[in-house]
Image (cartoon, rainbow, N blue to C red; front, side):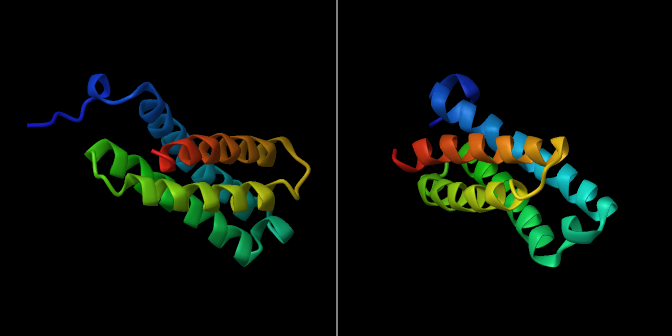
Length: 117
């Protein structure tokens, strides 16, 4: 029987799980921030991307936590969505959006590494 606990996973996978969970949280918080700001921040396509990014990050983390072999495919998709979300958030010039850019870039890097395994 295989156990899927932090001690049994690689450090890279544990880091990727943490990066995905952090990115999910930041994207959800950024969604609320953007809706509160209104204007370009609340553009429907931008909000849809933020929420899609939060969703795929959560799915990616849970897939790895379950020890599912398909995590490589999910991580590949997550990295792509995170890069798109980072680019979208990078178009704004404020600290809250920069926080999202950094979380998405960090998650994309971690997921890229996991998708290659």
